[in-house]
Image (cartoon, rainbow, N blue to C red):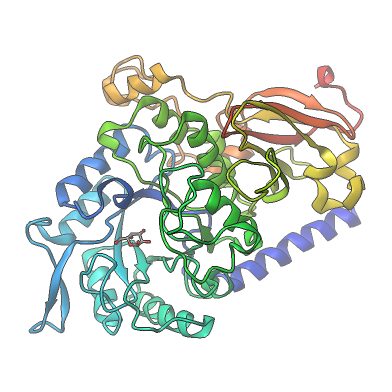
Length: 500
Ligand code: GLA
């Protein structure tokens, strides 16, 4: 009893501590979810693209899975209006009805509107930046009905180089957004420059930790130079950063993620075509486990069914949206070649605590086994390693217990089910007719992930695939460049599986 109260006290204290640390706009209590046009469309933006995509987000059940923000990236403006307070002017060809009309339409669908600007003279695409115009731009965004700002780092006029200079530059926009009175999620995009994980939480809801992601598992690219054990200490974030490069960067700073303030591993590449299915599964699993914002980066008008099935996996999303808001951490890694332990061919085990769904003292645990080898491998994770945070060398009480092992990819939608959703046919999961596609999938707009976990919804918990006993090992055969992802749930002490 005393122990339980102590644990509860610690949880309350931890929550207070985290809410004090995080920016106080009440947003992104779990990592934000949405879609951004950049990865698949670059500068080719328009009202039509955003609204078509928004409709597909609704039709494909993605909105109900939590993908909420439709984010317009770079290249949308044509300069400033000197006779109207230097306010920024949307490109009338790309946005003939103006931005407020886009916001209204998105809101009418129950979605949020994300906007892009830059804490510099120009955006990365060379359009007008907001440096020096923070107040007028924040006011304009609020008037349009914007709900989210992605704020980039190009052309920053040398106002970078240490944490104080960068944080001060980004804080100006944070204050301007807060002053509008409209809740606007603030997403920093300074690519990990000047260690935003050290100061971002006090002024923003998330911060990019890397140069731009590339649709590649492990392609070494000298334009993304920061790798290996020093990857976090990156003087030149670059771009063309592979998925394994970014996972490595994230591994050093997982402790910085907290409710309201997240490490942003960059937008998802799932669906853009250059990785294998196994690689996309691993990419999505790791973004979820590391509590990155989950921002779709693909063209939904031609999403392959197998990719829609990945992006729709509610059991994996539930890990990302877990109320405990704590990132998984890398517990070990080794290489199948003698040289590059930190390279794309690393075998890695990550684990992290989740909210308890048993009502008991012991948190659920997520386990991710990543196989970077060029062949399928049988990988093992001992309870001692999985629970190392709770006691070194196998001394954690959890190691002496038995656990349900729930494979979070076991219930992935089949390709034909996903295709039925895309085609809006009556074969879609539980659909009664073409207008209710997706109704049999998890609906987070009706029941939050937090509540669904409390309700023990099997769409979130998955099915028990095995159990692991005291001092045991979780084993999985993992595809080349793939990942296995499990939720461990405590079994009552001394109880055998068939007594439950
Ligand atoms: C930077 C950002 C990208 C994207 C482009 C737009 O590279 O990191 O995510 O916003 O700018 O130009």
